[in-house]
Length: 391
Ligand code: NI
Image (cartoon, rainbow, N blue to C red; front, side, top):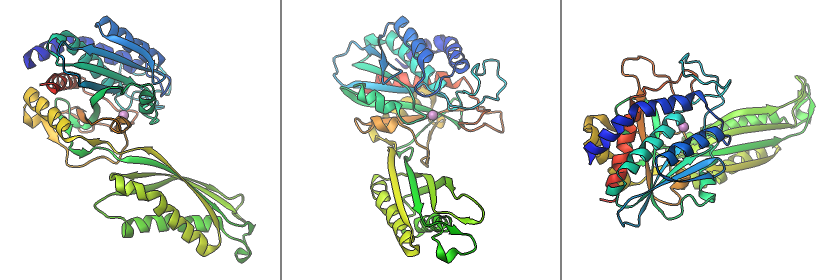
């Protein structure tokens, strides 16, 4: 079966490169993937899949019904949105839309999803059950997976597989990880309310800027002294706003930040832990405060047996030296984790780095590029893992 999958995928490879270049030239922002979704639906229906459009806003579902009678439904998820970045690669198939670029490889994910759908539709007579392809919108704003779930895309799903490109792994190789792959990402907004006054007479005022600086320092120091260093927490304040004039003491400062963590128990206590520090600093200096902690996406926790499935499929397909077991998770975020609240799953990293280049630009960089030979690696790995799921 592996040879058959490789033969079909190899024949499809030139067309898949064309598809990827088409998607790359026509990127669309999160929640606006209208052309992309129509294109995806067209390819899926011409490959004989059952297709449903408008799932999770601009998402698309495609299904391949295997001839086997196993009732376990396997989902394969890819994302379709691009980023508000001006492309600077100079490629002939570079983005034709000003200020929008597929800089996170979601064009490759969509292509791998389509290629896998084409391969599996050709071997449906050998599949033990049904495969559902989820082409979701709006991953970059961490909304698309929620929308898909709300529209019942996960109904009856027993397991889910996903893929994300990775420029620091060379094309031809993949990375897998047992357990945590990405972090939980939450949003933080803190407001410090003091009392305005003359810059020359601070004792008659309550300086919200100074207190805000104490809050930031206290939070950063408290992480190193009160959080388990083996259970990482990153808190970054990325935006701060307050004050009116150089000689006027500010009565209000707002801070906005992101909070990353890997362990669910750690994450659960973070809102209280932060509020407690903010409250005590503000109390000490006579300011009022407000803390808004909004949970974003959880950490991607890869399921053990589905990660084994990916590893064995890739090792059989490509030999074990092309399968890296990643030693570390990323503190980036990925809304694939939203599906994992409903069913076990695993996401692998698809190497897209050029072996002969010293610099492979990172994800979200205006010069980010992929070695397109990775598409074949991705399709064969995914299709063969899907086939093996029911064995
Ligand atoms: Ni991405």
